[in-house]
Image 1 (cartoon, one colour):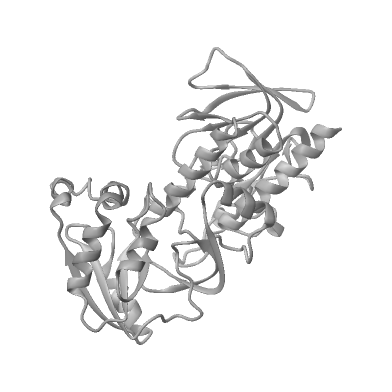
Image 2 (cartoon, one colour):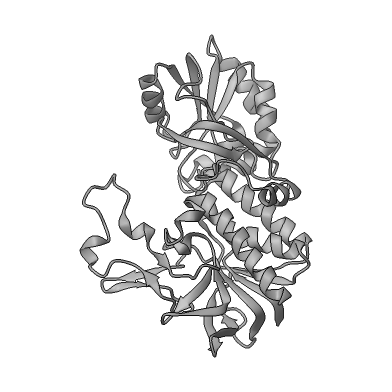
Length: 377
């Protein structure tokens, strides 16, 4: 199997780069183990003040609408965090307040939405809160098992019965000016959150829940669908077992599911994520990159990997693969001329790209640019 480029990782960075390369007429393949950090995505692109034009175009073509409004976003426990660019259904506020009287509505039996903590946090900001639950017959099967009452399973039902949800909430409303709902709407139909907003005579705010993230999974689904429509090959549920290198270049990779086939390409992009998606591995003696054995920037003394305070930013989260100025991966102190790196596997080794989702998009677009330039030589 031969491609112009092979991308290892099907998260935000891998899909963004894949879309750009496919749009430029390149034949690419994405190798994805399945779950990525998008399954934990808040819906806001941290460290991006505005969407790069390329991002606007790629996301719009995939059916993903963004909005820009510098301010703060609501966190699951009623606190607020700075944000400027988000998915359309993720609210951004000028300040840490959005109403005088707030009705917080949860689904009976759903424990991944912390209504009480949310109310406490909002009340600290001067908002008066009232908590109520709704119980719909369509939820009865899920309620039989706590393991089934998860955001994605609920969202599959909610996309079909959102009109009933509106009716229930209208009955609960008294004099509240705002309704807060869990983010369990719009998994397969991105228009559902806006329809709920239109049907309720109060401001509607969607608050995050425990993962998996419905907005994140929807984003991944839409990006993947667009990528495949452009002719990209998406190898789902697979992982790279071996990589073949020769004279400073990657020749091919072998995957778990296609162990009898070499996957060859002119260029490769490592977008395998951080520890969660096993893009980085650690043990008591060091931190490593498991596919190519790349050089990692990390503190030699293990005691410096973490802070004793749980609330602090933990140093190990900043560690990542070393690259040169063009995002070529470094192995044994030398750049691999056709292997590029993007996304969370970089850690904070390239601070100019920002952090979190913003860094994933920026580094992916930059890596794709470098691949396109290299292919012209």
